[in-house]
Image (cartoon, rainbow over all chains, first blue to last red):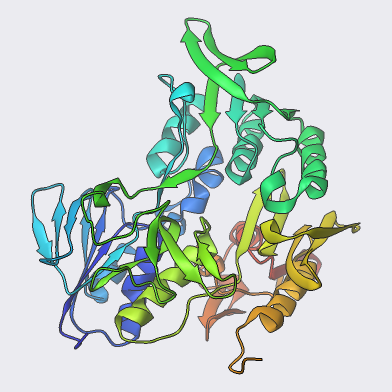
Amino acid sequence: MTGRDRVVLVGGGPAAWRCGFALRERGFEGSLMLVGEEPRPPYDRTMVSKDLLTREPPEAELALSPHGAYADAGIELRLGVAATRLDTERRRVQLSDGEVEPYDALLIATGGRPRLPESLRCPGVHVLRTVQHAERFARELERGGRVVIVGGGLIAGEVATAALARGAEVTMLEALETPLARGVGVEIGRRIERMHRDAGVDLRVGAVVERITRSAAGYEVAIAGAAAVTADSVVVAIGIAPATDWLLDAPALELDDGVATDDCCRTRATGVFAAGDCARWSNRLLGRLTRVEHWDTAVRHGEAAAASMLGAKEPFCPIPFVWSLQHGRRLQWVGETADADRVEVEDLESGPAARYWRGDRLCGGFAVDAPRFVGGLRRELELELQPTTTTT
Amino acid sequence: MDVHVDDQLCIGAEYCVRYAPGAFEMDGGVATVRDPADATDEQLHRAANACPAGAIFLDAETSS
């Protein structure tokens, strides 16, 4: 770009937020617009399943940047407006308020929407992705009662933590043999399972939910081959799907569980970039396309997209870093733990910890309440995984 | 309250500067302690708890 062009960032999450400010920090002087579907400027979505369910955090904590920072940086906010169509040939994007915005460079960073398969659809069932979702569930938590959480992953564990803190009875239904089995393996999963039970969660594993129905008495959650459970509130937390429906008639883009890009965030369409939860990028470290749905990666991805828009050719290949706060404990993991063929579990004084290996190479680490253990593994992975300039 | 950021652990997520502005600032992508007196103990605890990297260490015993 020449520096006087027009950049449109589609998305109101951390990737679009970081991309906008990074463009200015890197000297971009053209016009810059951020289009966000939600009514508020980019905020800390990690609070949706935590703080927003237990307290009312002040705006300064929730907002990623103070409102005035956008005006100061010359970033025009178009909030409460969704992008509805992308014309990659004429390089313009249509918005839900009827406006059509031309661009020289456009970032697709529309994130994801909670997965809610047909079998789990029932009026009143909660999902948690936005402030609005959190506010609605928090109001329901005021009356305590029995909460059933479908799912056993990070969001599910955080919601269980908040619901217990609010005095609810919590049942968690995990379809696999342990929580987080796919991400960190069964051995660590069993320890997480124990952690939930010790905290007072009625955790059922191998519980595949078939149907949710509602009557005057509340909800009934039917489980394959087991007795149904009843509830006053039901939360479905089984992951997200990339929010790319608005791109279905943009044939220049390759859509396959996310928008495909090269390792510099570039899609196949000229001037169109993608980052964050909705992007599937060519990961040089793994030799395949990857899509990551975590905060730290999304922020770094936004920064990488800004660099790429301005002509840099630095491949985006961050070492994934994930954390979660559950039952007062800090879960952290680094690297590609799901790729491991061997897991070495230790029980440290602080809690469970593990190193993950693929062949004879370290590929990840996990620990509960042991930031120095995880930090050490992160540095080891950085040394091991960073692409070197020489090839053998 | 004695506040310490382990710069080897910090990943630059900037949670601390949102939760306890004044107490922390960013320096070259890494958080550093500016003035803990600029935040309440509650803010400092929240910042330490929210830090994704677990890089903030508080020592209440040395608090004046």
